[in-house]
Length: 290
Image (cartoon, rainbow, N blue to C red; front, side):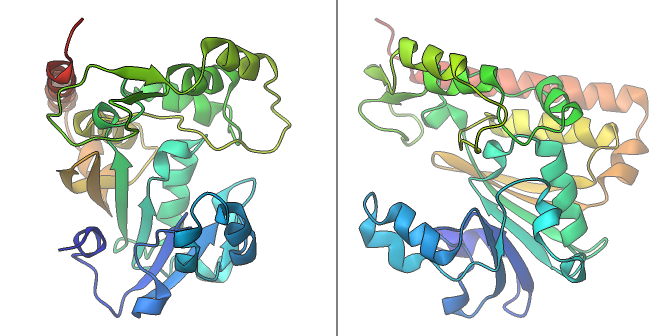
């Protein structure tokens, strides 16, 4: 199966889809017969111009954009008549960019059919990409951004991205189990500090990775957000796939996880925290120490 076929494995061709950030790599392109509406940061013409110089061989993949989202809540960019009408929401390498991840998850809930909608995610695995040296995102960080209703990344997040983005063996991403020794930073620390100092909350949005996950850390985050009543998405399946992992989510987490006892939730949290440390041990095991 292709990557696209794998992600859409449970979706019928008759399904009504909405895909965000498809850009030059749509998962469910209209040209292949999918009934898809697309959300992006610019129109088709704007995206072609954006990528014309950097990846000219891929601009032919860009399709018409149905909803342009530049600021505010995602729902603000999508007319009310579309809310609750989609069978599935598709987001490939998007969630890690969202300044307010909780708001993003809640918007996805509103857009899909009540009780029936599916959320399909492809998420970079921080152990196998340029986020290698970043720590896994914990729930407290996500809660802080939601409390502030962030629509821009913070100065701290900006410094972290520019200060610690790295390549290994000259690669921005790599397959699992590759021994790693030769790392290099994408930017000198002075550049990161300059970005920190010039950070302006009122400036146009800058697209960077705000969040960093391993499979277990993502499971932990979703469990804790559901327990707090902040999302109704629950993970049905999650599979590693090279430098990323794929997650298939359905609705019903608030009732399912909210109904667990404190002891049951604590046991699950501790188990996932242990698994997260195991994920990080796998990452460290790749490392060739000097």
